[in-house]
Length: 612
Image (cartoon, rainbow, N blue to C red; front, side, top):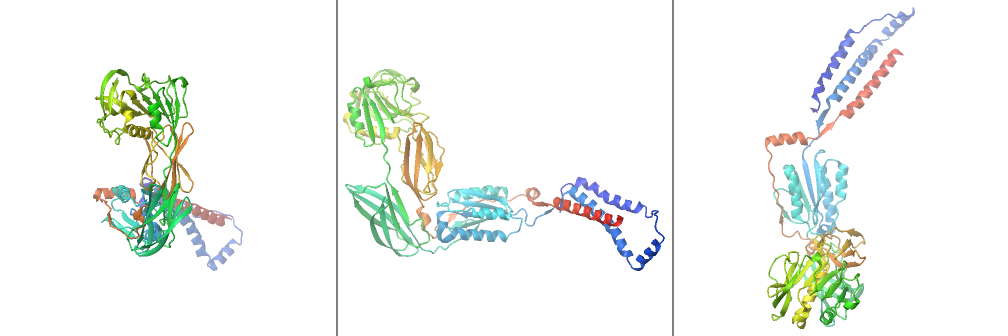
């Protein structure tokens, strides 16, 4: 027991004062009685009721003593220590996809609750869900209901367990209490002297999975390849290929134990948006019995070409299937432009630049003030070369300039190009510059006229324009298949206003983003859609598939991973200070207050009985 307010010990003098008052109070008093009172008193004496009367008198004194004592204790605030207080139990529960096999996670929950029940009532429990990241569901709680609720919230996130993230979370807690007990519940193999490993699930169970689905085209034939593996047992399975939910073929395959097998389908004139390979089997994990594949959506790029001599640009832009091209001469220009993704101005510029799309300026007669650039005198050109300066260039023409004899006869001199990236040079002078505004819109400047170069006569011209299109209108995603829990980085559409991720269950999730990119980590297996709403109301989207990581389909524990944790022992002074801070005390003030009221009520009842 510990007294929180010893300064109120002086109140205990009230007990001595009460006893003194009982001693010095008058024991006799004059009272008028009837003439037969003595006979009644004699009768009571002979009936041996006298001891009971003394007990009542003593009971009144005892009740008053108890009442004063309760008041003193209420002021002193005595507390007592809960058994096992200060002990901490950190439970790390693996919620990766592999824990979905044969109810591994449910078994881990049951084991966790049993382990907690075997500890003392005052043990502080922390519950950490270890999936693609580490989420602390409960921290240092002794409440049984809170613990059970946190355990019930543990759910599979279909990713691979991030051991490092979980270890870092545990380490921060160990820094606060090096004596905490750490128990890790998982079906994987872990190594560490600082943890207790609870293996859950049967590592010998059978599970089959489609690890990969891909396709390639050659002529009119599309070849689909699916990699299937059967763990811990040989199996014979029938696999079906679906194109847009229509069955396109089936194969029966005999799988050797733990050996991947590749199945192929050759489909002629295949036209599809999504493909799926699936097999039916009562194995340990049903969610990996199919694989999806989506084809990248080709979004139309609306391009406005403003030129009085559009031949070269018109021919090269029409070589791209995704480009929707409109051509206008100088006489057809308007003061305002809108609803185009890219504006190509050849030879001159409008008074006001468009604000809703990328702009290519081809040897303009002037440079807009907002670019911060000024044309100088004409300079003698030279061979067109890739720029070698800078490592942070975002427009990288890596596959351009296959020819080494592209010549620019003359070009404008430009100084102070700090805001721009120099992608191409001619005779040491900038020939192609590019930049991206904070809103994502691209600005591209050619400092020479195409008629002063042989570039349009080479295949490099098509390569350069293709990469400029990608730079100005970047593809949202490069990959159409990602692993659950892995961070995905996607490009941001110019003038993007809102970005959403549509989950397989139809839920829309808003994503924060920067003008450069958006990052997210999907965890639900199935088809996802990344949607970007632009300020002009247009919507650009990209479909992709989130799959269970192939490693999670293997029920075997696998190679042991090391959990790196460090316990720094506390000094005696730190232990003493920590004991004073972490001792969980139970305040008995409420109970004493209730006892005090009860005693006062009993005393009043005794007094009323004595008087009336």
